[in-house]
Length: 138
Length: 90
Image (cartoon, rainbow over the protein chains, first blue to last red):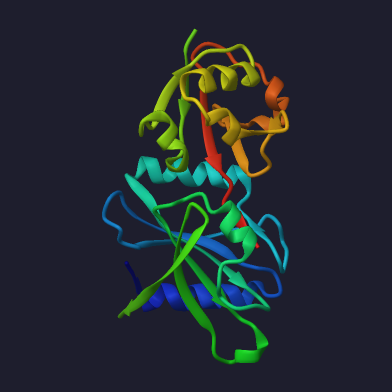
């Protein structure tokens, strides 16, 4: 599997991760059901307001799924940032991963690699993490 | 008495891939017992040590059940229950 994502979304996600530092940032990219295409970016609030945890607010979560249903969309990408560690799913990321069909994107803003950043994508199914290629389109 | 329950993708293996199922019960607790009787194993994915799992969100109509009394939330005919796994991590 490969994640195909536009440069605009990649830049916007990295920008959001810097803006919300030192807290983790999070959000989704939606696409038409069954298409697998990441077409509509929707930044979400990290209700945990934490540098080590993220969680969509339960009310926002319901609105998100209702909106997706109404638009015949599904969640294609779920992303969040790691502020001080590698862009690799943590134990809690794996434990709570609830969308087996989604690309889980992690970005990292850790200092060791600054000003470079990491942008990586994974499938997380039944506790198994599989990294996938990311193709950035213009 | 019929209540519609919307099942998230990750739990559909328990409901033979059905997106919505019917259930009965006067409280959320009773509805979950009824669901588990028809879709074995589903109850355990929702409950832990007799309480709702922290990272499972349940809504009655548009309201988070945590604000409606949790498992004791009153359910009435025609209500719609939505189950959504939290989107969360570290």
